[in-house]
Amino acid sequence: MDLNIDDFYRDCAAALLQLYGTFPRKMAVYVEDLIGREEPDEFGLPSKRHLNCLGALIWLGEEGYLRYASSIRYEALDQVVLTEKGFLRLSRQVPHAIDNQDLPPSVRRIKGTLAHQLNEAVQQGHSEKISRLARLLFETPSGQALALG
Image (cartoon, rainbow, N blue to C red; front, side, top):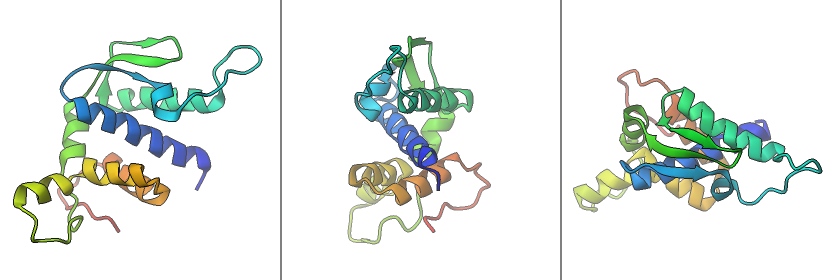
């Protein structure tokens, strides 16, 4: 898979998880917080990687996963919050995500969410799992259960 697509999935996951963790409060989402510091080019323009991440954030807004009031130059989006679509997609259950049936139902419910599974994949740096889960996030629900396969 193209490296920029892997970066796109990782950037989207990081931004959506940041918003999920503060939901329903609005916040500024800074590109640098998602991908680290990228040096501008010799003309002072943001790097391609930086612009790609900003583009991913704007795309999430255009596709209805988040809402924002404005951009802060090339640095961030301001007053960002998950939309209903973004929140419901992140909070839905991923079947067979939890094998341990001995866990209390509330723990199984939380650990079985797409948000929790995606957060674990991001923390582990597991690119293939991030891309698989991100594709699940972006799929149009058809009433069928999600699968990790």
